[in-house]
Length: 399
Image 1 (cartoon, rainbow, N blue to C red):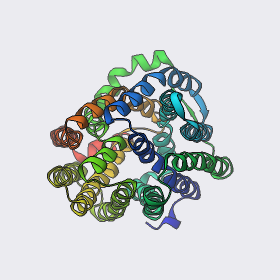
Image 2 (image 1 turned 90 degrees about the vertical axis):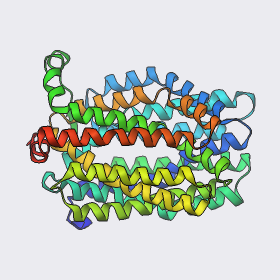
Image 3 (image 1 turned 90 degrees about the horizontal axis):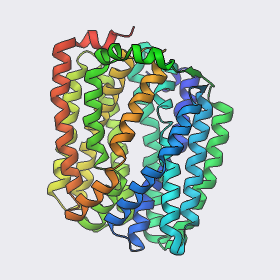
Image 4 (image 1 turned 30 degrees about the vertical axis):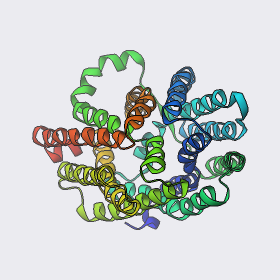
């Protein structure tokens, strides 16, 4: 499927993610900045865990106001919170820097409580009969944005604008760029209203939901635990301590990952959807192979190839796991199921920064060892799902 063949609303939504992609380097710039000015990886992990806890009240409030709303407004709130968060990073200075970083990070984490709106929106606007191809474009174009922007920004932050003062100005610039993204959403993203089910109805149907989603939920829990052990903090510390690099090297690794995403989506285009659970297992094995190479070598160019291999596998897993969810999830359930899965992910991630800090203090590779173990544990779930439900039954159950 060509990009031009997607519905116009789907194209505009994907372009929104393209606009966001360069700003995501803040995820790596912030821990790099904190480590550069003297904080240990364990201290940074403590800051981020405190931010997770501080964000809980805001998260609960946002969840309540989004029981029935225009999803587009949720996107605007996400970008607004992220912009304010990044602005606080830029203003953080002196003795109150840790407190400001925690507050800023808490606002950024709170915005993640609305991430359930993304799959809910995609389930509605992407063509149901060509879901895998639409998801491939959803991955492909934002990654091209990263391939182009990250090496440039990484070089600037690694070799030109690497002083603490300059990096704070960079955070402020990214915060102001958020205004452009918000304006684009307001003008071009199609409004879509979602309504969550009433609480009594939800309680009565929990068993029905569990019967249909149990394999997916178990796989998602293991998958989330795996990648919660390898966040941006883990990659930054791995590059600084194990590879002896800087933010430019982090950016090159991310560009390699994004290039691999293009390869992964090209592969999924040709695989089709006949044996999805087999492809999920193969993708997981490929990702684990890349992680093993990262763990065993301290040579940057090998790490560059390793993350490329890792991401090919992960891209395959992303497309088929997300497609699996969309095939068992009806349009009416999109909001409630996406919100429930988002809540599960958030619970898992609350303590992960502290755990990552502890593991990385022992060895910069330890977070990736844990990640690989939990990824491999998802393979038996994919095999069990395929045997118990059958590929067609699991993918067509919601139709």
